[in-house]
Length: 372
Image (cartoon, rainbow, N blue to C red):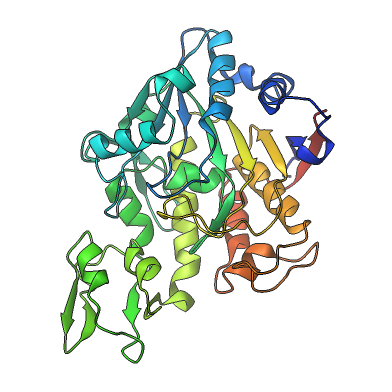
């Protein structure tokens, strides 16, 4: 029988006037029992997403500072961490990645803790974790994260062009994997070119990190053998001429995503805690070098020891809001309607949660506890 998991909720609508959110984050840390997963002297990974250069809606580093301070107060030794990207951009290697993190305010002078890219200079340092799941038997987790004694996962809850939404599960899966691990998750999706729409501008060939795209007869041709399915061409095509074969790829992608999350959490089930920041709920992941208008109002911050419960609660709270008109939310604006399905109609974010519960990552059944 699956047990209900506790999820603590800092509701921005109920925040008392003149009350600091920073103080409330510290209270959330305290009342949720986050310190219970920490031991004296733990090397504690604070898993964050520093945001791609051009994105402005990543989690506020001042918020992260509050969590870091509370970890230190518990006697542990925190460090901020993330992993390098599969696609080309400002976080492809550790040098560019750290520079981006510093430009976005995640330096020591703001957060009070050091910053480590856990998969090394060029994403080559990994630990193989055996999981024996349906799609994958083992996963490649960044060594710095795998070796940490404990982990606090801080996630910006928002939309995602493939997964539907990105929260704690995606932060574990993509965020803790090496570039090769990210390729393991993406490889079931194959981008294709609509020759009628393609203008032959060549942008896709220019940005492809695998040199898998060529231009012939003023049309883009994607080499399936070279393609890593990172989606960079899909998100950047100005003519919307490149798309994934959604019908065959969405389910296996979500399942592989969940299996990687399972592997990242394995060995730290009693040594991890999760914070979801449901603010700036943008349609796109923070991997995009831009930030579109949020699709719903800011909601608050959640904390839980269960990554499935916290993502389920986050999804439900987003769906309970009235969506903003004039945004990428094309339908389902009414409270109670599926906001992420209304943004990316071909996605199936429910599969992410259902499969995560199925393989034992956590429970979709939760008890929401409001922190005042």
